[in-house]
Length: 193
Image (cartoon, rainbow, N blue to C red):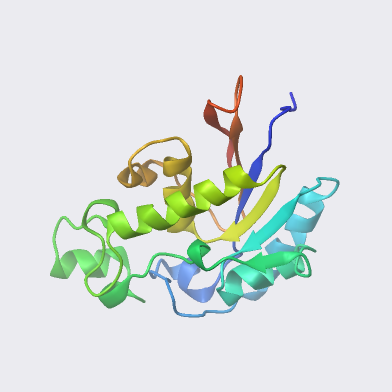
């Protein structure tokens, strides 16, 4: 059933070499793989026929290229707050490598040394939520996994660490919206690939 209320469509960028191997990719600008480009083109078919009052993208080339290949590149406005987490000293590392140095580490609890804390990522997500709610209409957002997960938690009014409860595959589509009225934010669809 279609909702009479605005819907926020979240798109995780297509596959990159680092996302395919599980490396934390925050601010390093890694291009899409051929598979990632094919999946991004497929997003265009999956989003066909939907209208958006605004299209926003992370500043990363992987998000911008995904928007472009999906057919929304000319409409996409770069929103700096949509950038992926700053992983600092953990940039380019896999979780299992981090755990060797720091047993028990969890991004959504511990943040990253020389990078972003959970509170900082949550504050960025709060700014994005506020901006999304100010748009009178549907918004299409292209970004990265950990930030979109944080954004979903904050959309629902959950603490930023609860973003750990959401998982996103590359080139997935999710939707945030409302249920009975605009005081009831909900997840309408999640991680559709």
